[in-house]
Length: 335
Image (tube, rainbow, N blue to C red; front, side):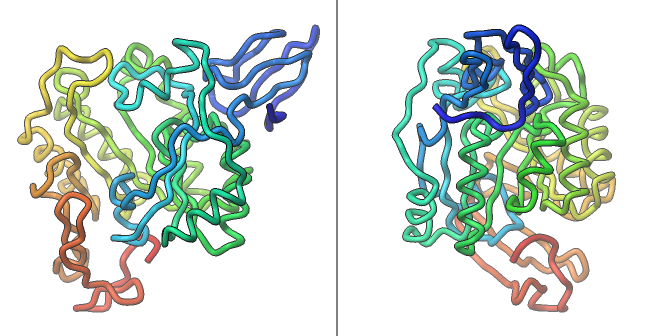
């Protein structure tokens, strides 16, 4: 076990965790909502420090992050646990393991080992992904700190439910994030995720304020968050973060406990693409539709295709020194 960061002690050895927006009050011998932070005799411990359940080399486009070193490799790690309980989770076997079984599984690794393996793999970034990186914050922070010293960038793939304290702590070594904005309904977050909407919106604003490159993803689930009105509200909020903020709208496939829904009609995803463009976003992308409309990056100035994609494959790349190869316009992101 590893002593946790961002908590305070109370009376009778009760602990208040200040890592995520749940701000769990944890009594002796109990764990927080995430299932991986435990009060042991009045001290909060992370149960997943250096215990990796997943460690892979992925295309950065898989995160999805389209404006951070397109076509590059991203060394991707995760531990078990999550502070959400999304009923449609695609990685529920590892994210919900501590909550459903009480088990904490994983292979031991040090921050230095992770970073050295990332460098050997040719990766340009370390991604904290698959489950919610906030719940393995201490390990992520140590890996990110060492990775930054070795010249790598760090990216979170996150539900955005961390506190401002957590963001301010990791911001100096966190370069980018893809944040799931799952819905614009409070009821959706409560029923489908076991959380609330407003902390996610606050985190997105805070990330932008701290200078972290942000991309937003919305998984469109038929009958739950696919109305034109809701999609427009999401698009308008993303626009409020800055029109350079990429919005990824992804096709849903049945997963975990949401097996009664059909995959999202492709037309619905394309409807969201149009909504995003109509409100004024510079970059709107489709997800989970390889070869479909909405995978390419265009120059916002001259309209030429700058990054041509098929799924995670880069077919053409027309960016030089972060600028459009045709007109010289600066492309938003990290290139």
